[in-house]
Image 1 (cartoon, rainbow, N blue to C red):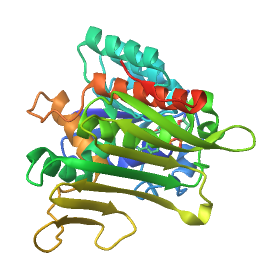
Image 2: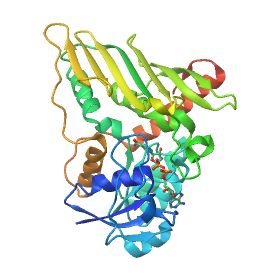
Image 3: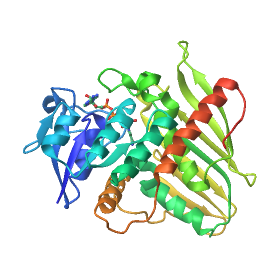
Length: 339
Ligand SMILES: NC(=O)c1ccc[n+]([C@@H]2O[C@H](COP(=O)([O-])OP(=O)(O)OC[C@H]3O[C@@H](n4cnc5c(N)ncnc54)[C@H](O)[C@@H]3O)[C@@H](O)[C@H]2O)c1
């Protein structure tokens, strides 16, 4: 039985909690959160994606306020690290040094340098570090990748990705809206699509980004064109400047030589392949959602069971690298090449 700890019990901590519960080989033994009221606060509905809300039974789970104490006393085999982004690097290093496997939420860290420190810590410890790039595991995104890689509909001519919502207002002290602690909309939200672009097409040669800012100068919306070679048009748009009534939407359109693949949370059916010849259809997708699939992948890896390579630490680092280039492109108003 895998002994699991959850570090950071806000929106994503609760999301991981619910999804770990679906794995028969895992038992949640400890939760660490600086908030002394997590018992009461577990009842609150938070976040922008369904799955974390509702009552949570914490019976039999040891509660801690401090990570060092949790690692020393509860001795978990692995943790879900669902803390605010500015704590990812230091806390991953601590857990790995204590001999604990780490599933750390995306983005890997605030800077490429911090990502490199995390990679070194993982190598030194011999323990698994996986970053929560759940979109690679999201059933429709995983299926689209499989279809593109199969080459059955020819090459991708153009690809458009979109991810839009209201500002994340659920965190206790609004750390999301502090760019120094979250990396802002580009690193926090838009990185999901940046990472998926890298997954589909490899490392882009360069990026050209444009952004919209608030009066206070905070970036709230970003559009990037990725130079993925072969005259392919690849664009991703991310924004958290929508009004609260808008909710949250994510979508993509992939135009291949012989088919269009469409995913849109707001459409019915949400996922369609429209071939040049024949009727549009919804292909079967893997079971579960992106969160349970990434947790299963992590659990299998730490148990030494066979897994398909879905993501590497270098790729997770490189997604932070690409976003850094995107921000630089907005600031300098020019295309930034990535070496
Ligand atoms: N994969 C996804 O779809 C997705 C979605 C949302 C957020 N995230 C990522 O998950 C991470 C967490 O986001 P969230 O929405 O859960 O944030 P949140 O603010 O809801 O939760 C963070 C929790 O950490 C606790 N905390 C803060 N400092 C602490 C410390 N020093 N020690 C112990 N606990 C501490 C807070 O009390 C809070 O409960 C972020 O990196 C974010 O980018 C990922």
